[in-house]
Length: 455
Image 1 (cartoon, one colour):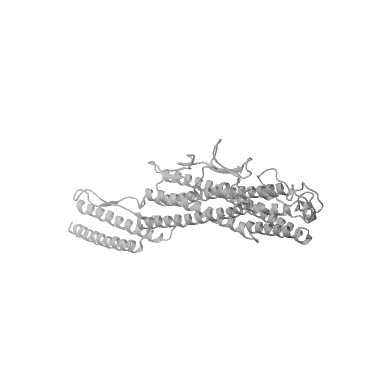
Image 2: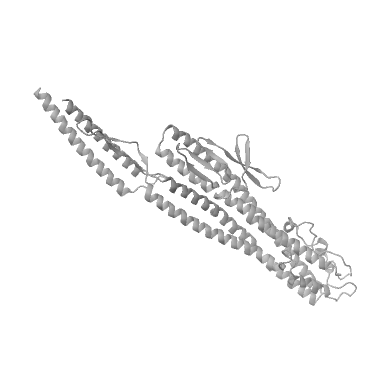
């Protein structure tokens, strides 16, 4: 009778093991569309060989995953986050430089055409008024472009602040999940942690690794630790007195570390690159063009005389420094009110002289921009061209990063994704095994009944 009772225990254990298999396969099937879910497997372990004990046991469900592949996915997410933020920002900046009427180089061409007409008819008030109008249209356009660049930088700054706040929330979530995993190593918690880590990588880049203790650590590009087991630091933004924009600091207790210049991954890194490099360069180029335009034309204009014979006047409001010149550039208000002040003649030569109108026009072909390397027109074209090339490069990088991400996602699906056909086949397999164990138990029960009857 003892042997028959042992067989009942063996059959019950076998039936329970097959039911566990059905449960895991059913759970996989139910989560086929769950974000970040990794399929689970249980291992069957044979007991000591019969007749001593025998039977089968199962381990707890385990995720089918690869930490190496997960790490590569996080790196790809960081790259895609960067290009995905930088490319549209550059495209918007490019649109801001070319939309809203003629471009700066076209306005320059209008100015030269106006000065050329003045050189042909220096005493004609209508021609002089038209030339001053083209100069005003040029300065208005330059201020408009400077405002567009400033807006794009402010918008990027707002995204940086928002992204830093989101990264802080995700870092805390990962730390909380680390704490939960330390208590109970639940595969679902590991799935949640991987999803949060992917979003964190897409925001700020860095490297997340799983140490031997099963805890995730997150290290920023400069070595600063954002997550250390169940402890999370914060990314805090505050105004930078030097630039007026937000700086990003890694705050851990009383320790603060400025990471603005080193965050080069994720959407925050992409927006930082756009704000502090791409659009900053465009703003600097616009300011330099405005300064060079004002300085070069004013220098010539001061030497000529208006229709009233007065010399030493400025065509544009003088600029003392390069920084901010594009936002300040303007035609001299007195010149706007009275075009007879436009210096077209050599001093003492009479109202019909056009010597200085020709000299003003000659600035068109002189290399007075870019430190003496370019004409004003070339410098204006280069501003748009540089932004366009950067936007095209960033867009191409985004396409490449998306393809890499899709490829890695495909690899992950092949390894960790749920295959419905496979899971249904396993359920059928486990069900058949359960039916066999049921028949086995029924037979043992019958034998036990017969034995009890005979006793």
